[in-house]
Every structure is written in C-alpha cells, then in structure tokens.
Length: 323
Ligand SMILES: Nc1ncnc2c1ncn2[C@@H]1O[C@H](COP(=O)(O)OP(=O)(O)O)[C@@H](O)[C@H]1O
Ligand SMILES: [Mg+2]
Image (cartoon, rainbow, N blue to C red; front, side, top):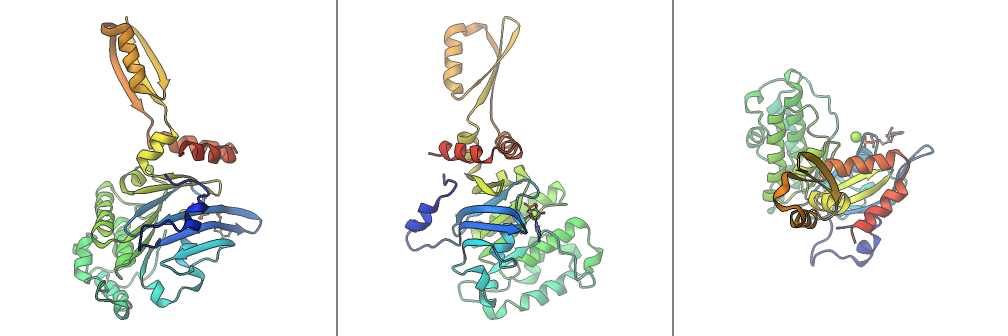
C-alpha cells in the first residue's frame, strides 16, 4: 500500500521495468486567494490502472483533475501526465487524453451522431498504427447505449442520456488516459451499471488509464484498482478497497447471544475471539454474527477526523497502518 508523502518512490523511480508512470504527482499544492485547497499531494498512476479520487464536496477533486488536464495552473509541485508537464502540453499531448467534465451543457442543436463524427475528425491526424483514432462513431454510440438516440438533437436528450453522450465525447479519440469527474451523477442504476462495464472494458481491453473523481463510495469500490481519499487538502489514504478496509478500519464487530442475553464485542482479530468464545461457552452460543468494517465505515471515520480538525493525526495514523 502506498503511503502519504511517498516521495521516495518518485525519487527512486521505482516503476516496473520499461514503464513510466502515466501520471506522477509530487507535492502538488493549490491555493485560491489565501485558501490552501491542496496542501501537498503525491500519487502515481500506471498504464491500465483505474484510480478513483474519493472525497467530500469541496475536497479539491475537480481542482486536482483540472490541473492534470492542463486546464488550471497549479500553485506548486511537480506534475507529469503522459510524460509532459500539463502546463506545457501541446495538441498532440492533448489528443492522447479524454476528458469528461463535471458538467457540460452545450451544442444543444447538434444531433448525437453528427457531433461525435465532427469531434472525432479532430483525432484523425493523431491516429497511430497501435492506436487507431477516432473510434468508429456508430460502434461508440452502441457502446454507450445511445443507439436509439443517434439521430436526435442533443437538447432533447434526458439527463442520463446526456451524460452518456458526455462519456462518448470523452472517449471518441480513444484516449490512453481518461479523466472522469463525477461521471454517473444523474444516472439511474441501469445506466450506472452499463457505465461501470464500459470503464472496465476501457481499462482491460484498451489498456487506458482512468482517473475518476466521485463522492460515491459504492462506485469507488466497484471500479477502482486503487482508491485515493482526499480530505483536508491531503491524500489521507491510498490503496485498494480491501486494503483500506483491512488496514484502516481493522475492527470487526462480533454479536452473539447466550442464555437469552444479546452481546456485542469489537475486536481486531475476530477469528481468534470467536475461537475463544466457543472454547469457553461452546453449545451455549447462538445467533453468531461477525461484521467487518465496510469502506463506508472507513471513509466516515476519516472524513469525521478531517471535519473535527484532526487531519494531522488522521494522516499519521493512516501512515502507521500501512507499514
Ligand atoms: N476558481 C476558484 N476560485 C476560488 N476557489 C475555488 C475555485 N475553484 C474551486 N474553489 C474552491 O476550492 C475548493 C475545492 O473545490 P473543488 O476542487 O471543486 O472540490 P470537489 O471537486 O472535491 O468538490 C472548494 O472550497 C471550492 O470552493
Ligand atoms: Mg468536483
């Protein structure tokens, strides 16, 4: 599990042989006026990795993504995206990535297929033998589930259909790196599942690296190879959902009843506790239930610490937990 302030990894350049990180961020800081929104964040993303940036509203997710996209100048720190500082990215660099913004309200009079075809033309000069650009428009329309709406005006789409179009616009150029800012806001459960399938397909089949900002825990858990939790201007946790649950909220709750009495006990080692419980009371134990902490428990504990101003403490604790 990578840890907060993991500068050593950058310095040692400890990437797999022949691979460089698709995203490498070191000590990134952002200040609006006199407010520090990002107070030094560090992370890397490898080819084909799906990373979710999870955090409450106002945590700085959009800010981080926009800095990586080159839409916003950072206050300080080192950032490399596809080997380039986003502050100096040219068109060729930009053509290698896809962007789905948090809100996109434009082009209402265009029709779905027309707009995608038109946007796709932009990527033609950036097509390579290994990566043909753009995607075939009709295939893409089917992939995002807009087959029935292909000839419709954009202004007439429902919110969820509109969001599917946003996703199609983001990936028409067959990006090596895709940024998604709260992509499923306004999706019904069906559209959400389709979208999750699409993300898996892009990373598995097309080896795209995906950075997705969300405040939806369920989504983070379903999609991410790795979750970064952003709070108080820092990345306070960095690991897979399982790692975060196991290492950060290590307590499990054991419930049972004995002689008609209901009992509960919190423990770090539920198996051992249950073994001892049975060794002691055997047949008298009934209604046994072991509940492991969920990602939601972990996240709530972290955000609570941040909201009560114990950020430094929370960071230290996460660091300790990951050793
Ligand atoms: N252009 C801006 N000028 C001043 N403050 C901003 C600007 N953009 C964002 N902020 C502030 O920075 C903080 C982080 O915002 P944002 O990156 O949008 O968070 P998130 O996407 O996690 O909800 C918020 O407090 C927001 O009000
Ligand atoms: Mg945002």
